[in-house]
Length: 62
Image 1 (cartoon, helix red, strand yellow):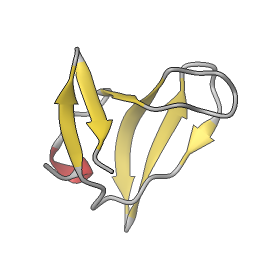
Image 2 (cartoon, helix red, strand yellow):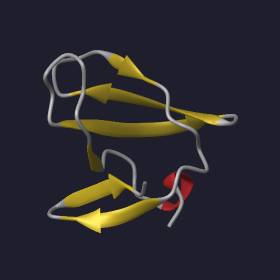
Image 3 (spheres, rainbow, N blue to C red):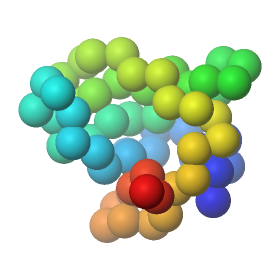
Image 4 (spheres, helix red, strand yellow):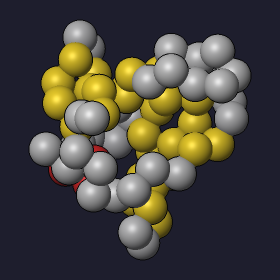
């Protein structure tokens, strides 16, 4: 599934440099998304990033 297909405010589990365990997806803005880590840092993922279900959210496929 692509990032642009998931519901808004979904959790995406990642390892972040600020120590956050997940980011929250808010919306697509062109080719990228607007997300924030659980600590408030802004993250822009590709709108076409591949995701898989993980716990109560999603995880980026590697």
